[in-house]
Image (cartoon, rainbow over all chains, first blue to last red; front, top):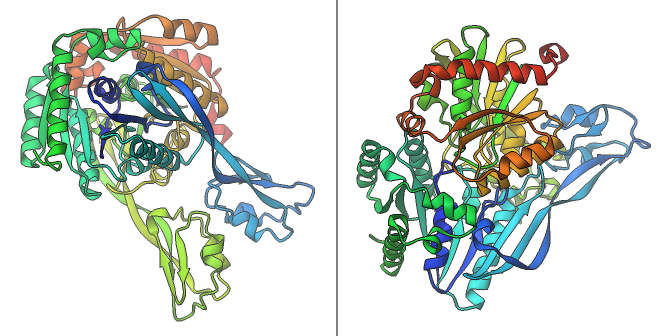
Length: 290
Length: 288
């Protein structure tokens, strides 16, 4: 079983639109949405939720004001400035529990924290594992790990060939968490200076964790000079450019209708999506090599 | 005045709004721009700042003196992040998991644990065309953005205008950036993805009690459901930027909107006036 993760560094380059199309093109796969704090893949796949599970993670300190002697020790020692006027700000509290250990009168309790939900859903393209992080919650990395683990487990149980995961933007904790066990990271970029800058950072992260990469340049024709820069960069780093997708309003039109673009029309974008899947599935058969 | 620029969905135009707002106001206000998207900072691509200085961001993590250690296991017991483990007569630390809370060193009965700063990012500052510029950059391979964001936010000005460019999403790096700001501009695009993530971003700013308004970018691209949502939720749309190939072309080259198309400058000044009205003219610099 091969695990594919779609990343970009920069947000809004087209990760989810591409994953939606790969969902329609690939056979025998389980889908996962690892962008747990701004999940969008469900908008293209119309899932029906089969199982909803609460995600409990981390703790939050709570001060019992009846016991508190207002000694200020917790306030002085908290590194996250989460305690003020003998009250814990749950948003700033990182759940370390230091305060509860040092309180001389045992006035501080650590309470379990419900950090979100995760779901197993049916879609017309197969099973989707997705999640929703609670508002202003931490631990997105742990929720991502949960989504990835479930997707892998279901794919193994169902004898699938692939998991295809829509990744979060950035290079931090949820991205690192998504990368675990991945055979190939598809990096979606756009020919803008910021897109190129962010691509370079996400390439470094994938290399750091030893995950092979392949690049797709989305909306390549909005600035062909920058597209050449990306191709040169990829060449210099020995990264294959598996596809160059043209700008086409069909992508947004499909999105407004809530379907992947390959189901919406058979135009240039859809043809290029087909080529993309052909190339990356070929690479995976070849052990991640180009 | 401290204005944060956030979005929920990535790639909707936070950087475009933050840089153009800063450039439009630099002649009339003391403007500081803080790029808090420390995972993928992009403001520098548009502003080409002259960097005057930088300093590493350290997170404190434990160092165990095994001569003093009795392997009692207290440190592992109190660590909420499983960043320290005692295996027989050896203590292992996992610095990437450590949040630097300091519990292990404080609570060690033998005083065998000291803390050492581990570099996990950098803060840089300088000048960009009359704007005080600060950015943070998370080291590749590091997971935790908030400690770097906290260091960037130490440069928030008491007076003048500070603009904070937030990362995408709605989780801890976003919360760290927008909390204690006076107003949050939420940049979105009128597509189902943009709207879905705008709703989440609005819930987050409301949870934090921050007043917000919307900048609608690439107007005309999708549908009108975002406008309907804003109307229903009573969220003002403070600026509409149309879908325009010239704007996209300037952006792709790293040219700020108000530099490439100066006719937008007055519109961004107007945006700031609207934000000032909505924050009721209160001067937060004096409140802190």
